[in-house]
Amino acid sequence: MAQKPSIPKGTRDFGPVEMARRDYIFNTIRSTFKLYGYSPIETPAMENLTSLLGKYGEEGDRLLFKVLNSGDAFAGVEPSMLSNSNSLSLKVCEKGLRYDLTVPFARFVVQHQNEIVFPFKRYQIQPVWRADRPQKGRYREFYQCDVDVIGSNSLLNELELVQITDAIFRSLGVGVTIKINNRKVLSGIAEVIGHPDKLTDITIAIDKIDKIGLEEVKKELFSRGIETEAINKIEPILLLSGSTAQKLEAMRPILSSSAVGTLGLDELTRVFELISIAGVDRECELDLSLARGLNYYTGAIFEVKAKGVEIGSICGGGRYDDLTGIFGLPGVSGVGISFGADRIYDVLLALDKFPAEAAGGTKVLFANLGEKEQEFIIPILKLLRAQGVVAEIYTEVTKLKKQFDYADKRAIPYLVIVGEEEVSKGIVNLKELKTGEQKTLSINELIAFFSN
Image (cartoon, rainbow, N blue to C red; front, side, top):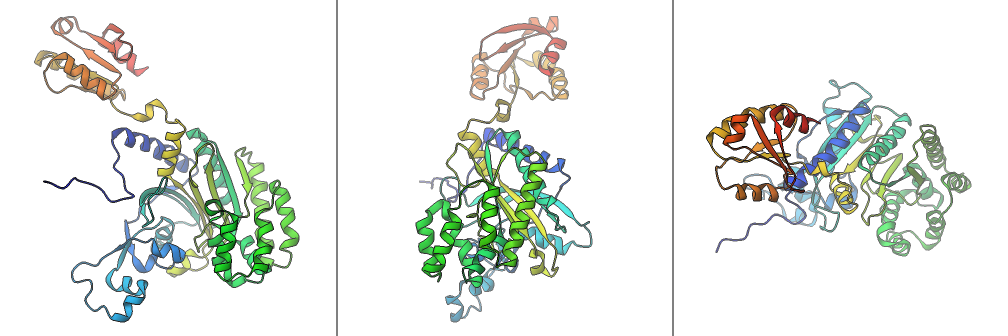
């Protein structure tokens, strides 16, 4: 008995309706990116493993899909390598599937620095892979839609990302909350509690607060070597309430002894001022628990949550001051944000926000009753398609009921029936399948009906 076909866990097939809906999301995002002056690039699915390892923190390294070298990949492996997964990986795997689009973008910028103009504004819509545990809203293969600007320190770029986010979700009809924080503020917190060397441990732990709750975060902080006294200083910051302005004001005395923390507050204050000036009426709030676990963030960080749906963040990003430095081009600051297309799809589905036209598919099917009818129909199809109408003819000459059933199963809304009499008179019968209403039209009237 043949084995039942399957696909790897955490991956999915997409049928025609799903693909049409995904195209609706991609086209909405892409058109907004273009509107703000961003240009497209693409990078390979695989990157050299040395380009990926160490860029996402210890958890990110574990989630990298590594590609085994061709040939005898394990030749030359020494016993000592078996105790170090990274050492072993670099020996038997020279390549890995990209974990995100930001690190490959940094590599692209350095490699092509003499061909691009700074500030460089790019967008990229491609799949990424993570060896994560599959669950609702979390997949091992998924698409990211990234928009970044590199080679500029201006906070106007942060504003532009907020505006882009606002515009995209407004177009999609989804209510969202845009959460904003700054890694400099988190660095300041690490300083004032006496653990400047534990920034990564602190951010990894508090970034999980939405998933595991405050008490579990405190336990994880303790397990990472943060003593109770220091944790007690962090807790009221994470629980700080009030408006964004009130939170910023409350943080001033707390971070007064930290130059980097105060700079982070200054940047946040200006970003929120710009958002107000720009008239972004989307809900934007300061979230001091927002950490974004990736190591390369150095300034503003963003996360977007959908309203009315229980799902993780659907969008996130931030500023990175020296990501290109790891590839030999130091001191080039960038900032970007990534839209998770697969989660956005799930949100639109849950909220029933896909417009009917997003299902795509054929608008009108012509029944096939014989060769003479085919010769009459073919020029009409050409005229309809020239007007952008998705139209087709049933390719087999068969019973009309079978053709009706075909149209019904494919949710084609209109069927055109042409017999010998209609051919002789130069007319067609147009039937709306949902209502059963039928009308006789000239060819010009048929073209006008669908064009309008």
